[in-house]
Amino acid sequence: MSDFLPTGIQLTYLVAASLFIFGLKKLGSPATARNGNVVASVGMLLAIVATMLDQHVLNYEMILLGLAIGSGIGAIVAYKVQMTEMPQMVGLLNGLGGAASALVAVAEFWRLLDSGAPVPLDVNISMLLDVLIGGVTFTGSFLAFAKLQGLISGSPITFPFQQPFNLLLLGAYLVGSAYLIITPDSLPIFLGVVAVSLVLGVMFVIPIGGGDMPVVISLLNSLSGVAAAAAGFVVMNNMLIIAGALVGASGLILTEIMCKAMNRSLFSVLFSAFGTGATSGGAAGGGATDQTVRSIDPEEGAMMLGYARSVVIVPGYGMAVAQAQHSVRELSDQLEKMGVDVKYAIHPVAGRMPGHMNVLLAEANVAYTQLYDMDDINPQFEQADVALVIGANDVVNPAARSDANSPIYGMPILEVDRAKQTIVIKRGMSTGFAGVDNELFYKDKTTMLFGSAKDMVAKLVSEVKQL
Image (tube, rainbow, N blue to C red; front, top):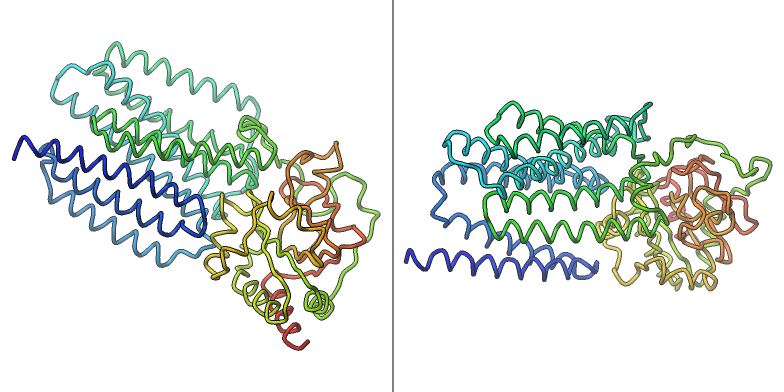
């Protein structure tokens, strides 16, 4: 039995890893994402059970207590947290993942220090990398959570000599790591390295603005996976290495997709402090202040929608803030009863995290078949009678296509201006994250419906019912 147990554990790890890969594949489509999550969860359960059978586990009582407390907190949070708060939740979980991985390295260092045993070079390097990546992920993710939750300003925070200061911190970490490789039993230096990694996480996120949060969230998710893989090398656990590598790779791929959707490099996202300009209102260049907009009331908007043959709904962060997704679904249902073909256009970086709009619409039970990615829906806008923009701004700004001087020039957008008519629901004429005026608002075919997304959509529903 004792000879079979290690082999059985490794075979279980292999099955769990296969389920992780299969689950990730299913997460690639909204229609199969829920099943993919279940499959991956079963894989994680197998991995936990197999690890619990390992003969190196000495205290099952503490492990079971931790599992019970963690499971209870997770269940409560999953039940209580609103879908509109998912970006903050993801950021928080990324941070906890990084912290757990870093604590593995700290605990292993302490164990080796107490035992007086020599520290192998590979284990030493793995611990140092785990501390760096886990520490950065921990504090960086918690700062991202604070920005998304509104606990601190979501705008980029910069100060003079910020980058030289960051380089100084990185240099201190490298010097401390080199010292620990030579003298691996120095506790003060190790604690100093841990502290530097935590500060680096803060410095990593503070210069990044709210509009770049989808990229930051996916990158931090990738880093949490890399930290877990490093922890796997520290404790020599194959399952941890595989799971961490899968999370790290998938998060990095998603980060690259987000950058392409914004037509920006990862370097510019992390270091350009994009969005430090005025974003609160008014035109920001472009000479659009002398132009006029045409506003309508809900009754006029309902007539345009109700007598259309095809309508494309474009959700944005304004819809998420107003929690208007259920009202949008009700409007869609009413229009479909009248024979209107309704589709949803989803921009990859709309909202505060990758897939934010998909999550909100899924909560409102919008059919997956109605959701269209940017590349699929753009050719269809010219045939659409009405494009209804709800709280989106930069992702529908034609300046990205036509104005070479615009900060967002070259960013792929949803081409709503090509529809026969466009209705924009917005509280006012404030600019988006990029701080530039939206040319769409002044187009001849565009009408503005000013007010809260939830209130305006509810009024549209009421008026459509009376047609």
